[in-house]
Length: 97
Image (cartoon, rainbow, N blue to C red):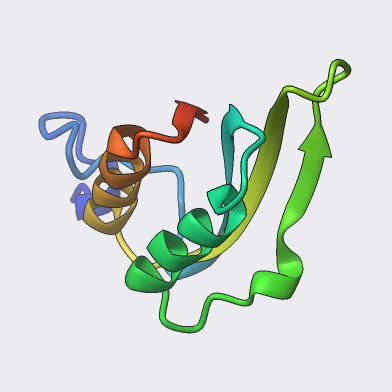
């Protein structure tokens, strides 16, 4: 019997992630006032227990861009998909990994 998390006939349920688990999401954007705060608010929407003290910030060599790693508690593929869509559609965000 195939478990729902490894069903090859349904790629939407095929996952290598065991839920719930801590999941890092890297976001890059122009270094600007409000960027980190905006990302924190989005993370809190999808993970009410999100701890902003776990944010990792990395400035680009030239200082124009800022990379932010959000460590969220992933509870489902749907949650992660919607979080990626929300982050990607934010006007301050350039890349989500």
